[in-house]
Image (cartoon, rainbow, N blue to C red; front, side, top):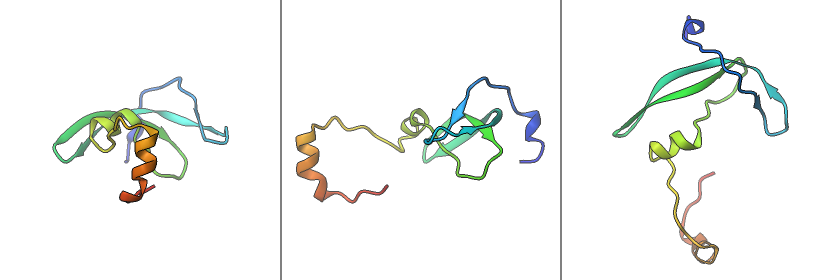
Length: 87
């Protein structure tokens, strides 16, 4: 995105990787995200590192990319062989 600096808003949020490494961020920016019939304005943290875009839990559930099932462990253990799991 050329000239993205004009769209950035400063943010005091500190981002850390799983191992505790600090990930410097340049600010936040709103982007329109669309999946099937759902469209959202999502705030993204902009960084200057190589890597994939990460969509947060709330945005993922709002877009119906993730759904939560109210299952008990007994049901999950008994049924795990019936599903293809993609991680």
